Amino acid sequence: MAQFDVVDMNGKKVSTVELSDAVFGITPNEKAVHEAVVNFLANQRQGTQNTKIRKEVRGGGKKPWRQKGTGHARQGSIRAPQWTHGGIALGPKPRDYRYALNKKLRKLAMKSALSTKVAEGKIIVLDELTLSEVKTKEMVKVLGNIKCDNALIVMDGSNENVMLSARNIPTVKTASVNTINVYDLLKYNNLVVTKEAVEKIQEVYA
Image 1: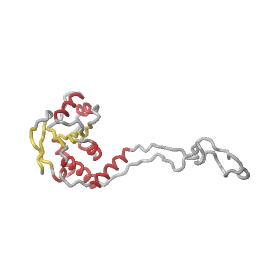
Image 2: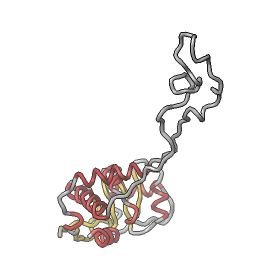
Image 3: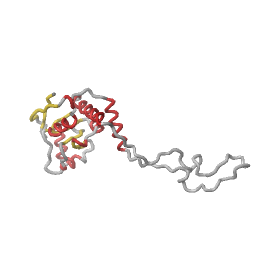
């Protein structure tokens, strides 16, 4: 297990914590990470796009001209796909894009992303993260103390003051241990995690 410094909200070292090699020290599996990111993005899709096929387009009930003798190709409706304002052939319809990954692959992808952050030195462990009131300025001050302006902040539980104070900072996102995902770990430059959250992550993904 690797020793890692734990700092307080002023950026000063207060203790150390052991990071499990089984969670934070594996060789990253790029394929698993890619699968997890693609799965996350697919699950975010609303799937509400819709196009009208020829039977749903208004009009076109009358045959535009007789079958033979006009010199034109035969036509049955002005709402066929080849006509302007006609129906769309093979267009998208509402659907659900969600699909599931197996549990082993999800855990491997998460551990790979966490291990990448540790290997790159982009993880900051906080002794605690608490705010007495909802104040974005205070949250910015804390991030300045730990020299981090682009981060995913992971806490053990939901801290409403911290979440509300950070939500107006465009380069910061807060999450709890059970809501973190591989996409966010890769999207943000740094991972800021509380000491309690580290212990819980190691329990969940060991």
